[in-house]
Length: 179
Image 1 (cartoon, rainbow, N blue to C red):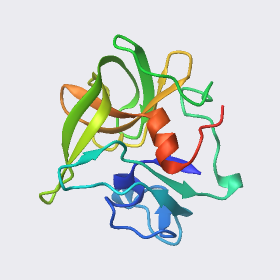
Image 2: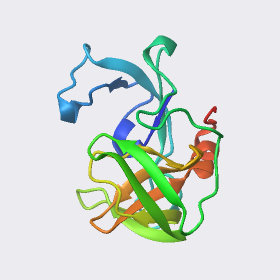
Image 3: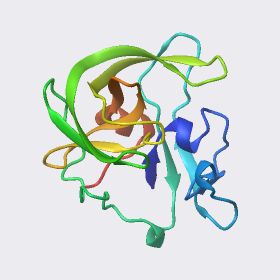
Image 4: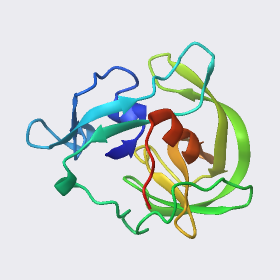
């Protein structure tokens, strides 16, 4: 499986299970059928009604020979999950900003995320870091310095990056990051 965000793989609830997943994605010039690498397998619906969301997450099923557990510039996850702590140094590799680091600044945060088209979703129990991302980095696995997964990057601004706690992501999708 590939782990990413609902808004990346399931087009903010607008995709159907089994829909093709492209790499590169359509925004980067990917086209079907040439760039199809998998199919949407599961996603957690995003609620836009003011109630709390806890994850923006989805997985796509990909043929085994097309993927690798190695995270570019980071290596392999060392465990399934680690709880974040304020002050913790974290790292990620993303499509737009490549390899970056940040520091956890808040836990259990509630944030409103604008998905465009007048759709705003409230997320509760989120991790906030210093700015370590830009648009297009969504879906990056955020690790501590020992490669223990901490969060799934899904939103940000010019001053902060927002992560879903990785343990919540795994429970919501019924998956486990395998070290």
